[in-house]
Length: 214
Image 1: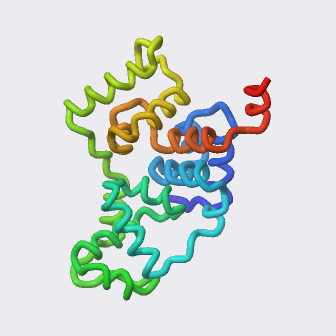
Image 2: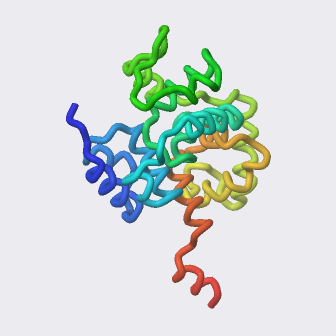
């Protein structure tokens, strides 16, 4: 498979963020893997293009804080990458495996680019893990989430009729009651799309604010 340059990926992300196009159509156009593109879109929505062009410096403390946050929040690899502005899901998977088997000191001692030892995960295994399907919430929890979402939407009688913006707003309102990962899994919206609208809610355009004032 041809390696996609950072410049091309960033172009694709900006095309998706600024245009009325679907995530699938853009990633197919540029030949970018779905999981990777979702992470890039999520990072762009949260931080802008800065971390995509200049990734955060990887230190022992960075690895340890990342893995601890992931486990404390029961976050997926994608959610963790987006939260930290880090675009390498394979590394996140390897660090967590190392942390679980050898403890925090293993991450603090690990040198950048060093190959894992003693039966640690291979690159192929990390790719398989990063492309693994999302874990679905149990059926009861899913029904409760759908019920609460429908109640919040009020006049809309079907989730499929709700816009992504409306779904993102409902998820924002229900995060105090459910885990974010369960909300995303239960509703017809991707993490990257939610992150995009969340960023819009937190940083609305000046024109939109002026219109609201009028």
